[in-house]
Length: 133
Ligand SMILES: [Zn+2]
Ligand SMILES: [Zn+2]
Image 1 (tube, rainbow, N blue to C red):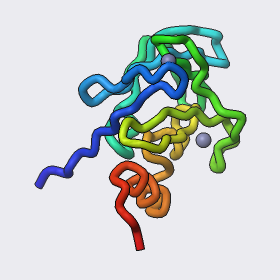
Image 2: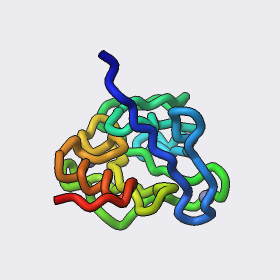
Image 3: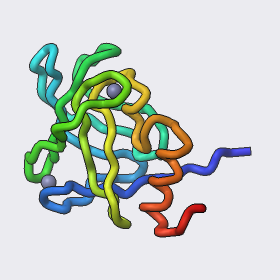
Image 4: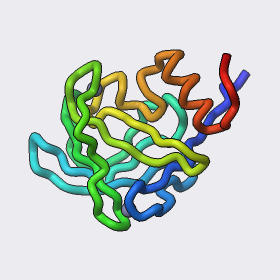
C-alpha cells in the first residue's frame, strides 16, 4: 500500500510567486555557519524532511531562507520550540501559512511541522478549510 502524498502548494508571502514545482519547493539559502549561499529545495510533501541542495550542509546547520524570485527573507522573528533556531514561513496557496524550522536535522524542519498530530490537524484545516472537532 502506498502512503498518500500530500503535496503543499506554497507561495512567497512577499511577492506571491508559486515556489512549489512538482513535489519540491525551490528557495535560496544562506548557511550561517559557512556563509555559503545557494539554491536549496525542500520536499513539498507534507511531513517529508527531504532537502536537495548544492550547499554543504551538516546536521544542525541553520539555513536562512529567502525567495528566489523577489529575494525577500522568509525568516521570522520566532524561535523553534524544539531547538531555538529561527523559523521560516511560507504561504499556502489555498490559504493560511506554514512555519518550519531553519535548522537541518530538527524535527520541526519538515514542512508540516513537528509531526505532532495537533500541528497536522490544524494545518489540514487551514488547507482544506474543514472544521475539525
Ligand atoms: Zn518572493
Ligand atoms: Zn528547530
